[in-house]
Image 1 (spheres, one colour):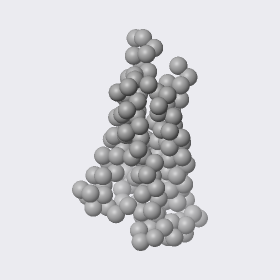
Image 2 (cartoon, rainbow, N blue to C red):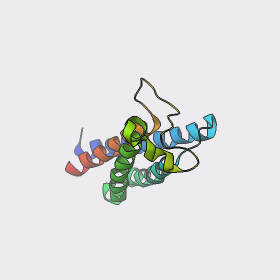
Image 3 (spheres, rainbow, N blue to C red):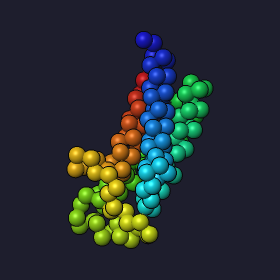
Image 4 (spheres, rainbow, N blue to C red):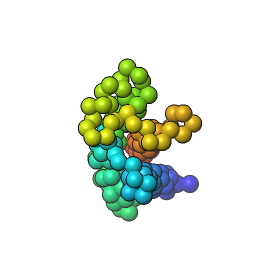
Length: 138
């Protein structure tokens, strides 16, 4: 497989991950009815533009126009880690109560005892960030 074709495939994969993350967040809030907390909204602010950024980059086959995606996903990783920490580390749970109408330490889902919504968002941000770095390194 040629280098350019592999980069295009990775770029399309990154777009797919961002699209699934956005669709998942909309499913949880609009279909199931889970009300997002403030940190969930902030993570959405960093995830939603990635669908457009990487979609355009994939269509134009140009990773250079996706630099904002690298920055947004990097910041998104940090926010997801902080949010997940509020949910899972008992000494930080008091910080989650200051989030507003919906507490940030509410765990609507808790698959296998550790997979929560911020965990899923964090994994998506990490995949996007690492995929972008792989393309840049190639």
